[in-house]
Length: 270
Ligand SMILES: C[S@@+](CC[C@H](N)C(=O)[O-])C[C@H]1O[C@@H](n2cnc3c(N)ncnc32)[C@H](O)[C@@H]1O
Image (cartoon, rainbow, N blue to C red; front, side, top):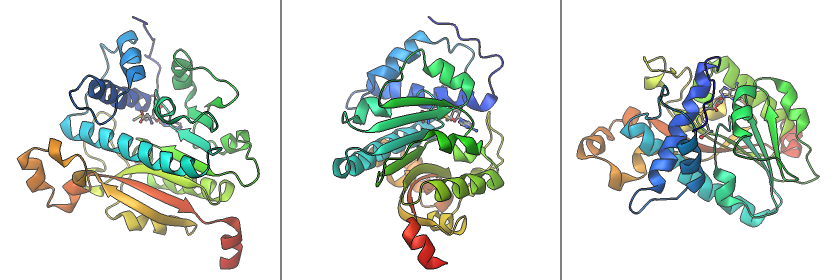
């Protein structure tokens, strides 16, 4: 077992073990919705004795649902544009590339330096995979992404934005809209009911309605939204199915696919 000294880690980074454990547990389940041997292998080798790895049944269902939805949606995009550039923001120990790599795409994993250092023990950089050890709120990271002409850019920010105050979320969208016009972005967002509730890493930002994301930045267009309450229904208890009648429970977490306006469309709007 590898002992990782995580005493000095930012508390937010400890949250990466919750999705890791959820994906590992799914892999050992009968009739899993996906399998992920790499998560299982990593979890076996990291000392998580002092770490929260279980976010509870509802959080686990949300994580599994978002993993599956985003896997499927990104696969659809790369089926059309196999040379896409994928930016995995707040990568943690995410394993999506192992599930969807087509041998042609280019992949960037960005996280805080402490986390990239842990990630480097299990994954390697190569011609198509690069690590960026920076905060996503440090605008300089965008300069590290070379963009071939006409490239399709797909950005994934899973389990990330709910930990930022709204002003940082707005700054994040402004940065992406400016640098990655036309890009797709997949991320999850919690309902505002859960903002500032007592939790190990409290949520600081949320949305009630998916469409409200368009109010945050005028270059943002909502393509699709999935409510966690409508996904993996076969695993929901009767109580949760009833509570799902409430928008705050049904939309406790939503997965959003947005697209940033293309540059030509942006100049038409001016
Ligand atoms: C809940 S984990 C999600 C990890 C991964 N996306 C997944 O779904 O398995 C949140 C991740 O966001 C990272 N993170 C938090 N604040 C960040 C920031 N300012 N810049 C980059 N990454 C950040 C944490 O270090 C952590 O790895």
